[in-house]
Length: 83
Image (cartoon, rainbow, N blue to C red; front, side, top):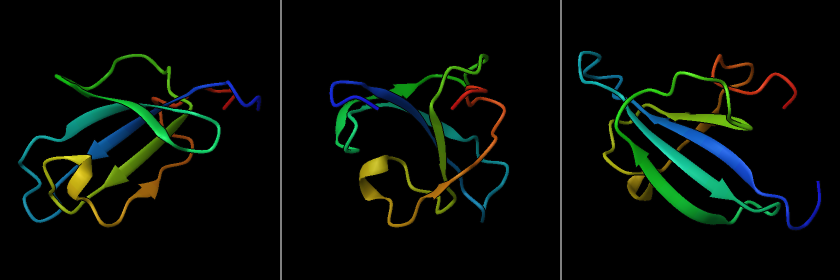
């Protein structure tokens, strides 16, 4: 991975204690070191597999800023096949 290459990451925020609550989706642009360059909340679940990585949090937090634990989900349907 080159230094100037950007990764697109999808973060799914769920609530395991209230499964009927809809999930929130956040799209991140990161550099090669993992520094977040831009954060965009999405209005609905993405439909196409265009993400380099998919991460999930199930604490029920509203934003990525307040999360404590986050897990990477490997081979998620929204992840690119080559990533």
